[in-house]
Length: 271
Image (cartoon, rainbow, N blue to C red):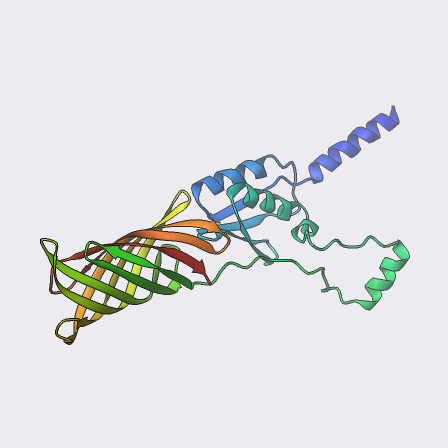
């Protein structure tokens, strides 16, 4: 009888010592918040409480956590479920945060000797996947009713919903009147661009505006001139593999003449 009472008391004590899992989601998309909350709710106890921030980027979800001791962890994960699994593992056990490094399990004697020689701050290294930087390189082709060309763009700075950079390229334009060519122009372009972006499912939609100049050379008269030019574009970005994406959409350019619509199709690489 006494042994049974002792066992019951031990079980009750162990249950009381187990702290329920708590997570504070500072910022995250709605679907990621729901997934993390569901996984945390299924855990009976955790070693620590975490503050979690998740930011969606073209390269994946940037997951960042902070514990009450101020320790910060950061990873890039592909989806909401991966983020939830990682959060639960970090709340339960520090050792899981470093899957590439398995800590040895020495005997008591060896462990004591190592503790005497190494400082307390020494810990197994944590493998952290860093998010890509703000720069993106875009290269592709332009095509329109009057001719085509090539275009390149470099996004120098970007936030979660905006970006800014420079663009340039070249075009060969043929003006026609009832299928009769009236003139030919070679155009070199330079632009400063700024845009807004929003992720819609797997695709990132961009509204882009550009301002700059065209250096124009007329083939018949050899005349050269520089004109101010503005443009607006609606582009879609679809990730393909790793840092590579396909990008394309309409771009309309306007100077002193009538608007010139064209289609752009190219590839993008995150740098």
